[in-house]
Image (tube, rainbow, N blue to C red; front, side):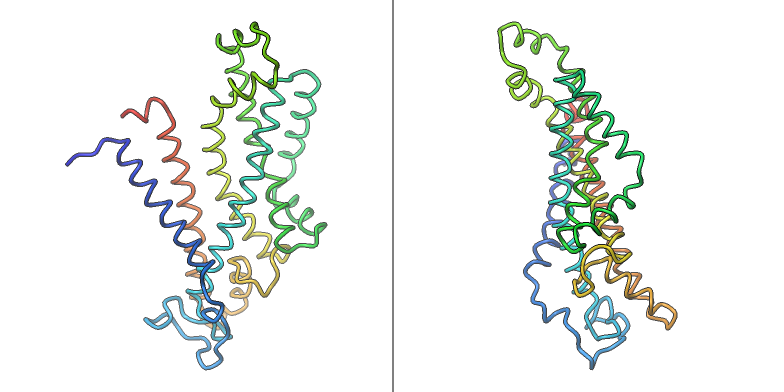
Length: 273
């Protein structure tokens, strides 16, 4: 039985979503005892009993990694959603209002994109006292500019369409035109942009946590795991870095692949192939 491109894309998208959802739920439902210290099983290499080995406190690295990935997914989901919503709102306002509003938003977009994300993340997270709240707000407040530009460009094209001009001639308010006629046309780009923000959010969360400006040291986060593991590579505990690092990269690649597949489904040309 041959499948067309749309069917294959839907199947692959479903598999990716299932894998990501399984990791997130597994981490949420996991009993803390699975990644708690066990001093009788310290520094064990990978085996059937401990797939990713154990660390210097005897904690199972597979359980810690799954819990850390789950935390990253949840933080990424919340931060990316907030950031994408900011981008959507500002993009709509900039393109529909125009004038001074457009110039002000464009100024802040250029300003935010002119400063490295990691620097802004560290500053915001530090000012908010680090921790979960600082990481989420830091990621959310630094990842909206690129999506804002995309949404603004799409809105500028759509607002010149005949059906939008007709709506204005019938006396509909700018807000009504934006919500009822323009928003549905840019919403697919918003969804794709939202998904593609996930890997950036996850990597930056892990990055600032690794540097000590993110989640607390007692949290089973990927950044904490990698930061602690760096101290033990010299004594041969390679599995403490290798497996969490590979799983983090795999998670990011899955989100990136998911964004590509959703874009194929949304695009009118590729969706029918």
